[in-house]
Length: 355
Ligand SMILES: Cc1ncc(COP(=O)(O)O)c(C=O)c1O
Image (tube, helix red, strand yellow):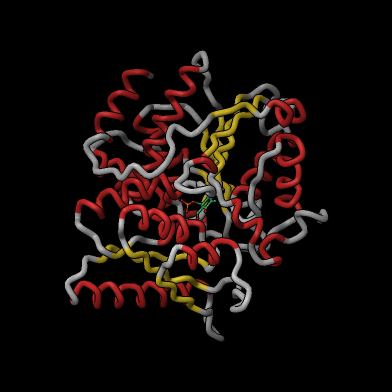
């Protein structure tokens, strides 16, 4: 493994990277939850990536995305998400560190109350981002409104570029080949840490998936390092299974190309777990509420209702059903997002009171 890690690292080092976060993030065993479930459960603490208190998976992507933007002399960066988007907030913060003006187009999946700023939207304001709220108009779907936000962003970028500024357009979730490189690099980081723990090997990695950028990067890293691990990507929103896998697979291949690796990813090993997203994006369910409470009660750690609570709920369900065998080494990749605990009551649901 050591040689494969070195090869991966020397390829990755050729790409521009803005050093924004705290890496490597800790890899820890969850002793009490392991005992409860009868498995050997570890956590990768990407809630600790920085660059501020709130961490999360986007910092890994932004190191590469904004690393390139800085080389290109960007003065402005536009990105997209929901009004409580972790990606949008982390992008705004990272832009500030690099002297780039952040511009956000935020689709109001859960409409914010204008007189009561909460959570990431509040932080976006503190960060002084240029904020455009895009409501979902009557007769429009969430996807329609998102499409409209992309068109608005493209128009704003063109206007800035015409006026002599340099504006980069970062896709929603940072889901581009360059963004996914961050998670291929993360697999090299994980492998190094696991090697140092007496050659620890995980049979499964559970993580939350939204735009698919993290998933594509994890699979790119898996292919590059020739790791034999099952990656269970737990959907935070409804997905057309095969179209989504096609998209993630091509993103994964494009990430490997960007890195300059000849590794070939295996589409048949890609799987999205669709058991937990209901009733919808930013809408909690009983299992995610229980997962939030259980991790807090057993380990003093927090997962969120939108992403990581649902991913942990899938892991808990698989451990309880016996799909994860007793004693298996399993990794829960914490991708951050705890600010959602302070978002609108519709987003948090009954996590506190039980439900
Ligand atoms: C906390 C958290 N976990 C997981 C994800 C999913 O990551 P991706 O969009 O790369 O699939 C996101 C991003 O949307 C997130 O904010």
